Length: 283
Picture 1 (cartoon, rainbow, N blue to C red):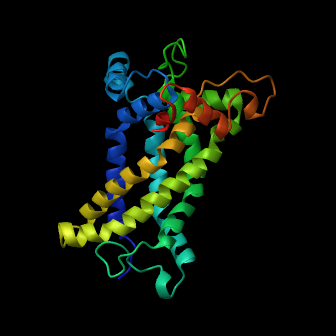
Picture 2: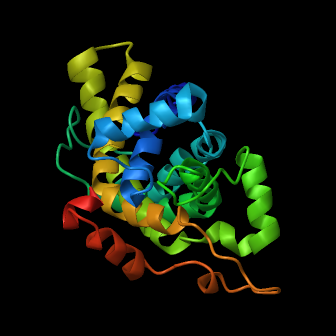
């Protein structure tokens, strides 16, 4: 049997991911504010309550456009890229047969390292596509939300945010944080796809039974996404600090991003570590 998903299964997983992105977006805003200490309160509940009180139901979805657009693009790339790399890395024969089903619910229950590697190789592609969307999303999420960090909102919507950033800083700014985001995407996709591939068949055959392919894909994707995000949180926290920062004012003709923004991983990580709570801030 082939280990590849059917088109309708990919569509089911994509739709579930899109719905999850929209429903969970206010929580993503809370995460970003807690990661950067912008408008954060003592704990998740108080930060969420502050967001609801100050931004209201509509304001809680400021910046939701970029992640939706990113999700649409990513869904057309991620799984095809993963199965391509699985074929390239695994090879056509023997233990690493790229079409072989692995994990729970199969005859090959052990962890296949080629699946982890194939998933990680999807990361750079995701970073190229996603870094500009992530930057605009974070600038919108933290715009005006930080206890005096900004006296007023700088952007009305995501399109205006993107235009302003382009006009003021040029195209290079959209890849601010690209390095850490690439590593972050490699970690996330390596964990996500390996978890997904190793539990999907078990959920389908041992838990839900015949005729449950689409539901199994959505459920396996949800579990894999949760595991991937937990593994990913420290890098995501550093990325938020880089992409969500208040950018400086460049001199006329200035093109070096580092002259008006912090760009280094170590610098951003040190800021996270220095806040009250220490290492726990990364989670």
